[in-house]
Length: 301
Image 1: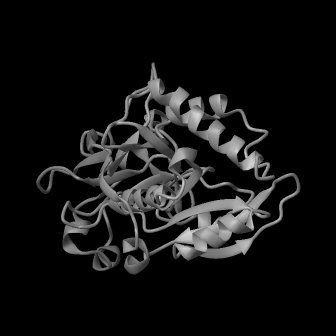
Image 2 (image 1 turned 120 degrees about the vertical axis):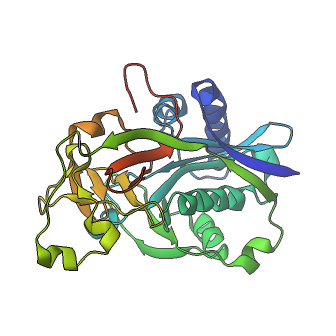
């Protein structure tokens, strides 16, 4: 049996809700109240609509698991410094109860981690109920790091896990085979910085700190400005690792700096966007790239 991870669409919302409801009932029979107070249908509609919810399907196209992946961190649990670095946060991880013991839970996390890495993010994080020690032990057995346990009044979760690397030996032992993470990526926008009158002239001392190709391409893309320093956004050429634009739950960021601008209105918080040059110097044309997700009615990306 082989498996793929696909992004859920609006038509998949009932399937996702069914998976979560089934797992919640399974936990309740074992005395674990996790998800018992949630409304899976309502929560699912929101995360499916933003493109953050995924389905694990087998080679018969049956959905056997679900996971939600977002760049938005829960402020109750993750510190300011953690939120200031790009990461992907996993939640609502569930597999079909009749598939228990097949390694699908680890496969979901594996797929989430691989998706994060392919989008330029090196960290996958998630929180676990503090009292669910069996689940915490399971995650540690997969090689995940328990960072700390946070107690927040009114919240049952708070055991914080992180993955920065996978132990190949652990994953090779009895893991089902992941065929693909189906998330087509394309060019969402292309911007000519010159027509926006956004080319910024650098002084000699500033140019010395940049690579030659970077010095020729420092600009404000779609009027994005760093709130902290008010310095323009620098974008390297296509053969250099692109800048990552993401929403941490409080604001849009590039690196550890907050950005603002009218261009952000059509983007989806929770998804990862990449900024790279598109064209030949000195055109100063840049492209905003990301997953091809159908936009909500009235929105544009």
